[in-house]
Image 1 (cartoon, rainbow, N blue to C red):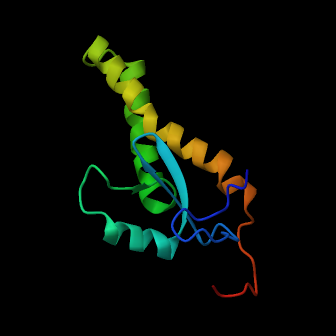
Image 2 (cartoon, rainbow, N blue to C red):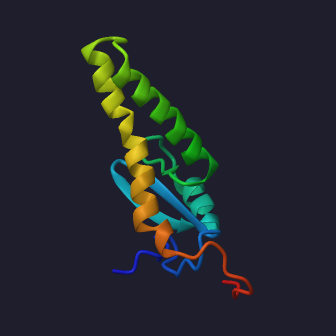
Length: 117
C-alpha cells in the first residue's frame, strides 16, 4: 500500500515539505499543503473539520498534551478523574507518533529540483 498519495488530488507526495497529515475522528490522512487548504475551505461544520497533526499546530498540541498527561499521571490532582484525563490527553500524542511512523518517515525531508504539479 502506497501511503504517500494525497487523499484530495490523488497525486504523489514527494517530500515532507509538501506533506500535511490531518486527523478527523480516529482517521489520519496525508495531503499536499495546498490540497489541505482547499479541504479546509470545503469543510462547513466543526464535526467534519480536519485538524493538522504535523507542523507547528500539531507539535504545540502534542507538547501541551504530553505535559498534561504527565501531570495527571504523576500527581493526585482530581484523583481517578485526573487519570482518565491523562489517558485522554494521550490521544494527540498517539496521532503524532502514528503520523510520523506511517507517513513522514517514508518520505525524504526535501527534494531539490522537483517538478511542479
